[in-house]
Length: 87
Image (cartoon, rainbow, N blue to C red; front, side):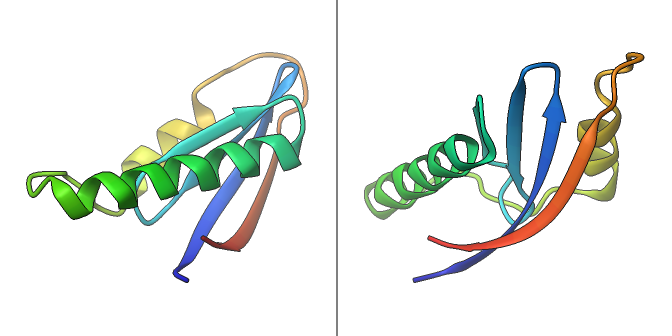
């Protein structure tokens, strides 16, 4: 089981979970759904990477993280949360 770091972002009516180690995202109407989708996506990439050799995977850069956190400018409150997950 691998350890991953991710950031939750609430935007409008949904949550997005971004994995910092590989840039994979999951989204849903709640944090739990976003996290479940993120775990599914990580597992899918793991499965594919065992049979395909040219899968690109890299930690996101500070610039990409900044873009993710500031992507949507609006007057609504945006929440962030940093967590860890085992997938």
